[in-house]
Image 1 (cartoon, rainbow, N blue to C red):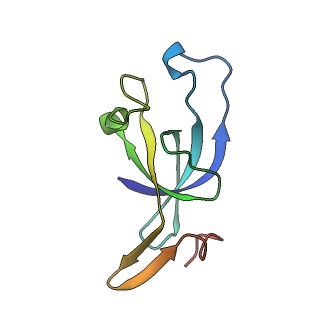
Image 2: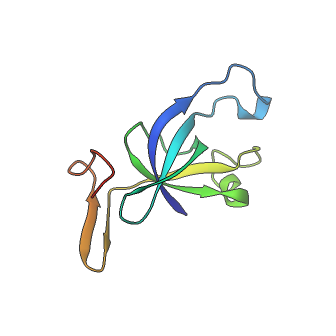
Image 3: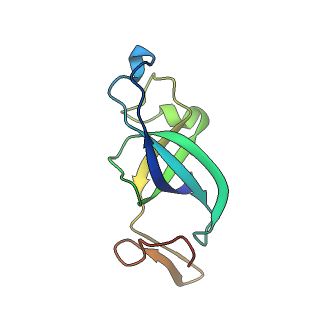
Length: 104
């Protein structure tokens, strides 16, 4: 699993039939301290995430192991919306309080 911030959406009117009905999100990858890594990925959304939210996503064959993506040709899937996290007893993020910029 990886951490990322949802920064946009992708719309495609022409696609493989099995992808119909999926929502695609543009994710900006972040490290454990919420700092942007400079990398991004497009992921199918299995949980109803929105722009600005921090999420957990899986990539590779794991991306096809959700109910929404089963047997679909996806490489990445958002599978959780992050509520909070802490490192070494220090809270790094809490949804609703820290939803602004990525810098801690």
